Image 1 (tube, rainbow, N blue to C red):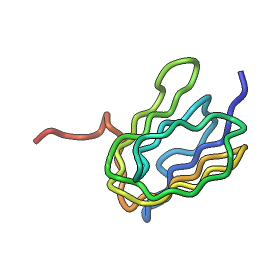
Image 2: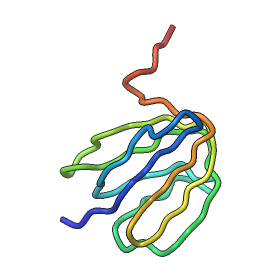
Image 3: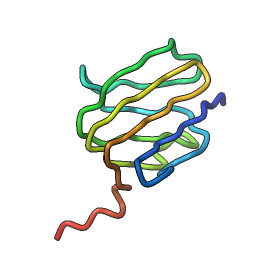
Image 4: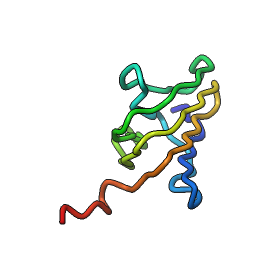
Length: 92
């Protein structure tokens, strides 16, 4: 299956940098999916969870507190104000 390169970057560095089959991003106008060959797009982000699909299933889930996403046919780059992997969130 075709993939695209996905990067999720915070002020502290790269939180995710790898290949994905699809990425679902919380855009300011609602969630949008990014597949290989997507039309170019720039969007602001609402707080929410980014789902990175690998192997036909969600491989990574990352909460972002806002920022920007840039999409090209080959890649999805997210510049997040703050981000944390959902598995690392402590309810306390």
